[in-house]
Image (cartoon, rainbow, N blue to C red; front, side, top):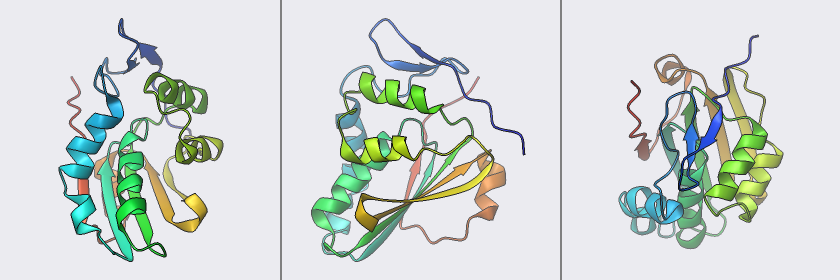
Length: 171
């Protein structure tokens, strides 16, 4: 099975990680985590909706560097039932290579986050298809669907209560 193309990781003049394939930044130029938490976690009212929840499922189109995963997991960890589990399913057509993922985490100021360190240590090869990881002591089940969203969505059997859409607009 042929591997997917890794986008070359570049950095702009502010140090923000940029996709060399599309010229799009992976995060805002300032406050990457604050943006993910405001737009996705707070924007979807996750703390209120997940208060005491035993299970939740997020579908994301466009994994990028994983900041939305971290924002969602933080909200779940703080507000859901301590025995609960978050299912996070993310589709990514152009997954970063592991060294680039680590560099992007460093540039975004989240390299020390235990969840992202665990993710980077178990980051799958860029093979098309589904890659399932159980993280955070079993509280997070991550499914990475590597491939084009139009082809991957029909392969997913899930019922998501939250959907994160990527604002990326390719040329």
